[in-house]
Length: 321
Image (tube, rainbow, N blue to C red):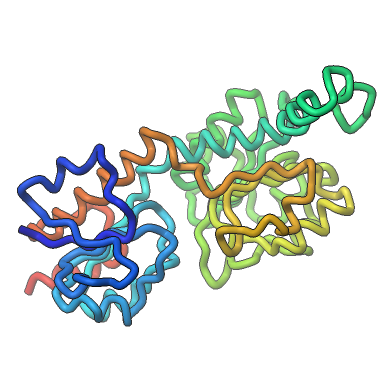
């Protein structure tokens, strides 16, 4: 039987996939038994660096539970001829839906209205100009990144009769045109025109904190900012400053630069900021899909089969020799 190390508890609905096939190891704070692991099943809150890989000399595959893989040293895995797989399609639907839950909650002031009604009664929210929400019809949605999730978020925007712009240097104009989306040649072009800006890019050295004071200043006054991608994309102090000045009209955030965040986090002080604790993909269906995709690929590698979502495909043929 294969031996698989888990740094998160196995989802019960996927336990049948290991029956008679693999023995689960971990999770354990002492890492007892990790030296027997042939596969790592990786959540996003653990760092998988060379030192951790070397604890498991029998390791044959590293499988990420989700899309983002900035917590995995792919280069170190490649140097050890260890395939790294991830689940890029699995969280798409749930994450795109959550982005729109945040858009609507911020634009329609749902959270503030709900809290005010509970605390002070029906009429307390009326009579203030700031209580008025944003109508989305004929507004402009600006997407930074037009991959799997960004493309689906665009479809929801079109359902609201919004104009949809996107900046993504990796997407062909023909692809954007087929989706009914205006591809803008510069990030600044999207920021200047969009009433709602939503991030859908990975964290790289080039994108870390790329949403900074300069970028927020380029956004339309009163625009809404949404981030369900990665917290490290955003200079959070710059966002707080832009909200405090009133230049940014509100924000919906599922991710933060350093998680979990403390109750004293500056972005929690704003009534026009709606936050969730990195749960965009955490629906019943989405969670199951992530686990099923991850385990399927881990088992494929252990059986010598090529998985569909390799982060280091260049080692596959070399590894088979």
